[in-house]
Length: 116
Length: 119
Image 1 (cartoon, chains in turn blue, orange):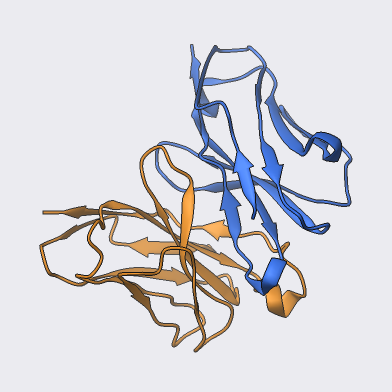
Image 2: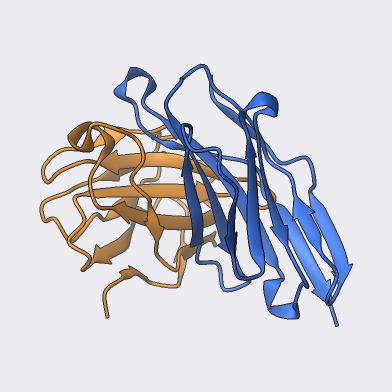
């Protein structure tokens, strides 16, 4: 069975601090994809990144960076110099093609609050 | 502007009533999905559709029904059989479903959601 664990339920930081959101996943498949989504208070999920299981290169996009480590089954997300607008719930998700029953398996999310 | 629209933003259901949530996309995506989100929880898949006139049950399909008569539209009906319908409902779409694309990597894009409340 697939599983995504986001152990941090809530994180609170002060603006300009760096913050890392943890994501640990479980799957028996060799081909899988990992995603991060942001859910601001408005409710809509905003896609941030997709990573496939064969690409372990870390990625940086502006203040966002992602660290994918297959050895520890982790796909952590770091926000550098956090801003108030980063306040949201962040979801990590996993998909694979086991049994051709494709779906996204979501973690329960981490609520990030960035205080001015 | 291309995107996914959901209506209404808020919906109230009376006891024993069926209600239908609308989801429309103009992204020319083949696959569409319905998820349910409860407070403090991740999203759970209700139904998904890879192509027109075909759809599959997700993890929590009981008490829900869908149709996919047009590529752009994937309405969700919450029936009276759904005993705990209060939740936030999110619709998503992706360019191709996993089976057609040969893999699960297509990114899903989400609509703004509908909040369903029971009177």
